[in-house]
Image (tube, rainbow, N blue to C red):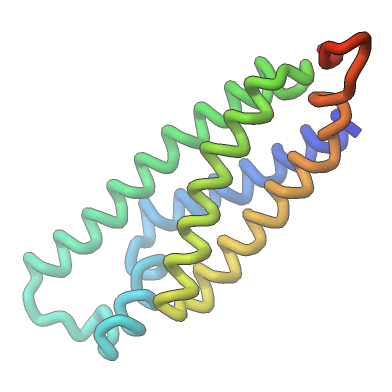
Length: 148
């Protein structure tokens, strides 16, 4: 189950990478739905070029921050998770769990269908990838967990 979970989490990370690259290189696509649902206007209707530039720059900055989290996720996956080390399981749960849960809730509140869908896919992949090998991380063997 651990190898399958690693593959699923690798798929999640590739999926996340595509989403992150969209935020960095096409921020209008990622931010447009939320902007429209909050303001009732299309993002392209913003007349103030400085405001639009600041908004899109913020989206790019979030994408770069997410990219650093993704890079750390690869490190966690290959250094600890695939060896069934508990710290890696918890790290992925907290780092990606908080990120995807916050994103899902935020986009549900703002009724951003595109981002709700993307966040839900990410959350499902994360949960499958973490719950599938849970015995490998937390099984009892003489009172201690097994580490492969």
